[in-house]
Image (cartoon, rainbow over all chains, first blue to last red):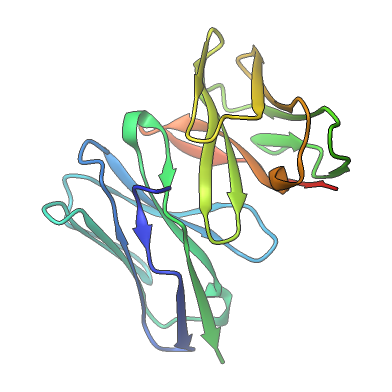
Length: 109
Length: 111
């Protein structure tokens, strides 16, 4: 995970928007991913974006990709208490998943 | 049945013991992976296999070995467990073209 950088902690009020940022290094990654890990649980694929796209929207989730700056972001609209989790971005150098350190999101009711 | 099954789910073992973590998948993919998760460090790749005859070291392979017994089975061994191998271990299968599927994880504690 040393090539994928994420900030570590975000606190947000229920109903507000959350934005999680990620910087990656592998320009050959065909897809970039966001995974969610709830407390005590495994990894759940949240969404992904194809590398030739700038934006992808999926219900409350918006992914923005800036290939020039190798920057990926995830916006969660109308954040709910069930969104409290650790979020990992991942790139795919050599078709292997390489993860960032994760960003813990805590939703305050 | 889960697409990727890891056994055991939890294990406590003593320093110096040999332990094997097992993984099986029903997705029919050739590629399988073992990751380790430590708090604040994300998931780090231990070993990966692109087919039955292909084994590759990841970024943190020291102290670990793997065996790819069949397309569906990929096991991880700790030959002589040490306390800093206490972690959550994940097995995965897949690739960019069809996505990645993870097991539920094995929580290993070395005392």
